[in-house]
Image (cartoon, rainbow, N blue to C red; front, side):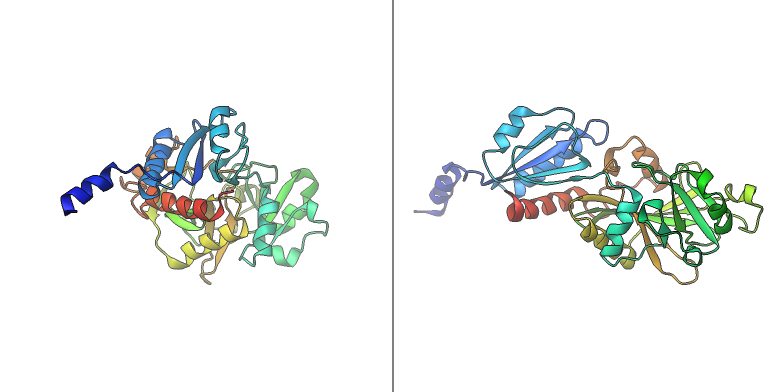
Length: 320
């Protein structure tokens, strides 16, 4: 049979049936459906043995659920599952964890975290390990974006502990005169985007009266004069990978990491496990892009290809 004829015969053969399913669970308002469609198309192109479905997290998606149940399945959702309840399959999804629960997972994995205290831990706070300054953070589930965080002298915080309510006390990591922190986004530990936020104006002295201390900027966040730069620092990216290994059921993580001035030591603060962190198509994405000088957020680590490859690998290995 000549080459042309052989090629025509091969072209007419039916495609091999899919062996596994991958379900991408989309949350309207938290991710762009277009992002998930692009990732699904990459998976279909690279892995014809995997059939891809996109389900809504706002509804039971009964038809998708029934179809996906016909083969071994892997379910992926950056956000915690709300209304979609898969009939079968290995599930990787966001998870609601308090700061205390996250820190305990990090400690169990041997990861570097600042000393912390919460009333639920039983023993009283260790004044020496807290140091001279602490961050008093709201301890309730879902507290984020720096809301309600107060920088306090440790002595003052301990004296006012009852009045502070349900707080999480954390040793203050001083990142320097121009406070900074890293945000590393990972899929199963592999980086898909990483940047550093830094204040562009000096924070001022910490040696001020208590009533002024809370006004001292300690982190470059929204509403402050800051700069944002892409991060390729190997030790920062490595800590992001280790963070996923501490909480492996949460596939898409947004790790907050700080580097201590003077020592250069890194500390992991949280991973934002609930999953409302799909940076590629969030309401604040245009601002992030502008702060990074107009860069395509998917370009640093070829994000959608990286996510698709990771999902292909997991689906083939763990679909059930």
